[in-house]
Amino acid sequence: MLKEIYKRRELLWILVKRNLTIRYKNSVLGFFWSLLTPLLMILVYVVFASILKFDNGRDDYLQFLVAGIVTWQFTAGCLNDSLYAIVGNTNLVKKVFFPRIILPISTALANGVNFLLTFVVLLLFILVTGVADFTCVYWLVPAILMHLTLGIGIACLCATANVFFRDMQHLVGVGSLAWFFLSPVFYDLSLQVGILNFANPQWKGIVFLNPMSGILAAYRTAIMGYPLLPEAAAGAALHPAWLLLSAGVCVAVALIGAAALRKGDKYFGDVL
Image (cartoon, rainbow, N blue to C red; front, side, top):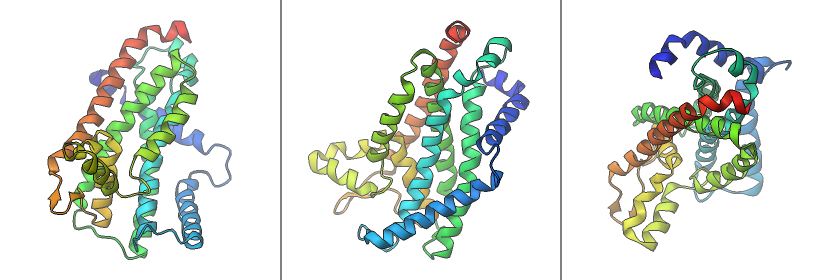
């Protein structure tokens, strides 16, 4: 499958560009919205965080929150856009032979490009507000790799499932909302770890079964200098190996998604 994707890398790039073009088709500002949207989003959070006085006890909570929201948007984009990666390309699937996995991958990569542009705005915001700490910036590479791997995996799963079960678009809407609140986007990872440690100290590391927990931790460590792994209790820090659990889940989701798409590929033409 990897060889087939590499052979058709030009097609993959064409589909990525098409997905990016469609996103801003007929809009006056066009691709500029990739930069304008995060700026407006940050402005909204600045205004409402100031009005509501919601800081969660942190001086840098606004930057903490925006970093989490920007990171989550990439995941949410892969979930939502991938639903129509195959269903929305019926004519292409029926008439042209090519690895169908290219369709969800192109969706994930298009969201990845948009995320990187948004991430640049996030970095500027963190720098301007004076909370940037790039001491552990090397964690940015594994964060992006884990995030992209997860994005491709869920894109393959959602794209395949939506061919056979059209209710997926509704399930994804509800499921993504639940996933959002189960992920440390607007609260610190230490909250989850503390709750599990209180219930059973042996469970505290399983928060990383949610891959977004490890991904968010790695991003915030890279750009804000946050402790990579919070303490489960006074003097009881988590072992760094727990982060490999999130990485393993990302890889597992990608492999399962690719396998599911490959198995369903032979039936796409009949069902569509």
